[in-house]
Each structure stands twice: as C-alpha cells, then as structure tokens.
Image (cartoon, rainbow, N blue to C red; front, side, top):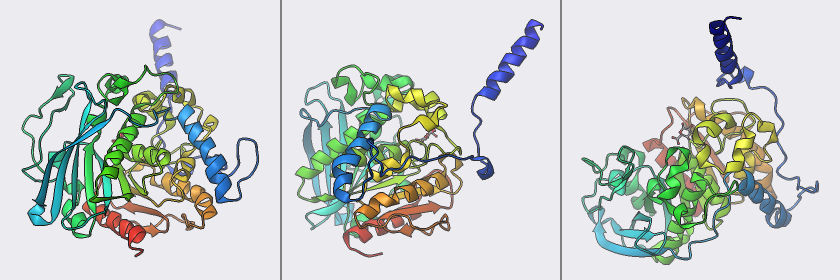
Length: 416
Ligand code: GCU
C-alpha cells in the first residue's frame, strides 16, 4: 500500500472507530439498566429505612468513587460577610442582601458573591438558590448590584468585565415574579466558585486550590461547584429572612448536572430543579442518543473525577446510571426540565431515567413518573417528580420559570 493510501485508510478507520452521535430513536439499541433496589450484596431493598441506611449510601459511594469524585465534608474555614442590606429593593417589594463568601477565610479566597432577594415584610421565605453563568448584575437590572471581577478567558485571570450590561441575562430569571409569589431568590455565579477551564486548569483558581492535589477519585469541576452551592446554603441557614428548610436548588445545563449532584450529597436541599442537565445529569448514559459518556470524557472529563475516564466506550461497565442519581434525591421533590430541540441532552433519556427511579420514590409513599409515554410539550407531569419538555432549545425560558414557581407552590403550598 502506498503511504498516502495507508494514511487515508488510517484516518477513515479512526473516523469509523469514534462514536458517531445518534439522533435516531430506532438506532438507540438495547441496554439493561442496573436495578437501584438491589444492593451490592445482592439483597433487595423493600423499605425506606433500608434504602436510606444501606442502599443510598452504596450508590453515593459509587458516584464518589467513579463519577464526580470525593468532596470535602464542609467548609470549616468559609466565612460570610453581608456587606449590603436594603429593605427597599425592587420598588419596595424586596429586601436585598449582597454577601461575600470567602472560601478560605483568608485574603487568598477564592471569593464568591451571593445576591439575595427576599419578599419585604416576610421572615423565613422559601428560597430558590440558583447557580448562574454570569455575574449578579446580569440577572436583573438593579443599579445597586455590585459588579465584580469575572474570569477572563483571554487574559487567563479574573478582571473587571468590559462594558457589563445590567440585566443582560434577565430573560433567564423571574426574580420579581418569584418575590411577588412569596419566594426568596439567591444567585451565585459558578465561575466564582471555580473557573470552568478546559483540562481542569480552574483547579488552581477556585475552591479546590485550598485542598490537597487531586487523585483519581477526587472531586472534579462539578464536585467543586456543587460544594460551593452547599456553602451558599450554609449562609442561607444563618439568615432569618430565609426558610433554610425550604431551599430549592436550581441550575441549567452543566449546572443542571451540578445541582443533581449537590442535591444528592446534601440532603438539606429541600428540592432540586435540573434544567437541560443531559448526559451525566438526568439522561440515561446507557441510551445511545445525543451526547454520550465518550463525549463527556473527551471534552469535559475535567468536570468529573479521574476514574470516570475508564468508562469511555464502556458504558455498560458503569456501576450506576442517571436513574441512580435521581434516586439519591428521593424522597425530595425534583423537577427535570428539557427542550424539544435539545437533542444533544436527550429529553427521552431523562423521562426514562425518572421512570426507572420511581420505585425508590414509591418506597417512601411518593409518586414518581408513572406515565408510560413521553408528555406533551409544555404539559408538565406533576407528581413528587415533575418532568417537562418545553418547546424550544437548550435554554431557560420565562415560561419555564412559571412552571418552577408552580412546582414550588405544589411543594410548599400543596397546590397542583
Ligand atoms: C455542552 C456539554 C453538555 C453541557 C453543556 C452546557 O454542550 O456537552 O453536557 O450540559 O455544554 O453546560 O452548556
């Protein structure tokens, strides 16, 4: 074979060997899901007590060792400073607080900035804790919100944003509506917890810098952001304007994966809303549709622990699948939301995972997803597990927030 022909053959073979993204339901192929109710020793869980004391702990351990890695228990050195309080925010409808979280309690930080609105005149409001992609000033047009340095991908350091626009991401939030319906809203930007840098370089600049060097089972990026969310919750526990027993954690996309993992580990979160969480979030990994484990290993391996790499092209060897992650939230309410055009995130895979986690909810006398067919678009299934698919892309739409607020009402006001 001539050299040129040989090279063409190698390239062609390489292309064939890489996994091609499948978007055809008829090509998904067969797979067998592990049973969440069968323990490592083969015994079967038949009641909530055994689930909580034995099986839940086993699954958490599998996730820690193989998927997201181990995070430190709590933040003993973390300090909070409420540096602004206004009792006349949003035209008098809200109390606004701006809180600095110092993750080391030393000048080296890192620092994150929590923005909190609670309804005026109300103590102990149930509150959404939201992980966001942008600075607090982007979430709402409120001139009193401080603008902080953010990670600059070009200069590779934190720097003041150039021409920041207040409220530039407001369409992804409904803060005033949430306040009007009696909820608090707390927001923190995930890259302040740790910058999201390819190959895990963010490790040097974020919360993980204060802990020993990573091992193959140490926390990856998602573990770091989830840990940061728990530290923000630590603050909320100290604030009398917030009902810390009723905090709903929200995140979209990679932050949808993050909130599932945060809610799985930290049972103080009363409920979780995971939007567009997709692969290694709520979508089944064994289902070959859209993004796969191989894609995550290749492009976003640094979100996971080192041990995760062994599952590239070996999805059936995973000791878990996403229905296990969902089951770690049980019996707490969970809302999975996705988009009809977001094929990459595999809405059907989320629906099937929620169904597969339903026996765990039922152990507690709760209702998971009992429907056998995928819901009509924008018609949420409303049980203890909520599931919706909006018309549209990978996004958080204003109409999604209407449903998130209804979900909160259903949990806390017992409306449906
Ligand atoms: C990529 C990635 C997804 C992730 C998304 C995001 O598309 O493949 O897994 O959810 O980015 O976070 O924006």
